[in-house]
Length: 234
Image 1 (cartoon, helix red, strand yellow):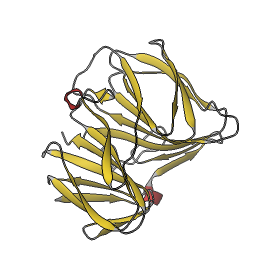
Image 2 (cartoon, one colour):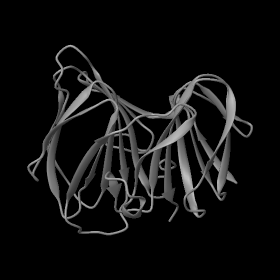
Image 3 (cartoon, one colour):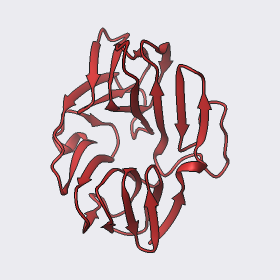
Image 4 (tube, helix red, strand yellow):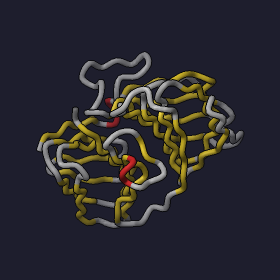
């Protein structure tokens, strides 16, 4: 098993006033040659957006873009004609494909928005752009799949042999995650709490990349919530 540890305080940080952004991988003006991507995972941003503020209309192409609000809500509009609000407890996916324009705003004027935005390289380029969102319910003590490939049967599927799951665990225990594809790797971010993977302890917003194994054993040391992104490594 091969691992790489990314402490929370080693992430890139940009505070624009209206946007307080933490970057797990090189993004915008933050560049770290050792933190470009993890396999097919290109971006994992942890953004806090001030009330009433957001990202104006901008383009994307040939990227699978996943948005997971942790608290608050986000108002999405795009060139495909979608105008939707995505709240905490929902997940949004966009296949940018041949090209889209979209904007994302915090529609609330009294509450900040905290979200994860994830970019995954697609396994097909120049596809027709696509949008989907859905609600999910986290089951305590288990991993809840949010995103998968088209074969997963999830409405929030993407053009890649990748899965994204959230796990919540209220009490100390040991759990395992078995990879859907043994040649994939996982990037695990601890959203909150305290866990251990082998000898590596993780606290809130620490992350660990794991590859060259088909199963990961995770020791839950206290009430914890984690994000698991399983992606092809090449």
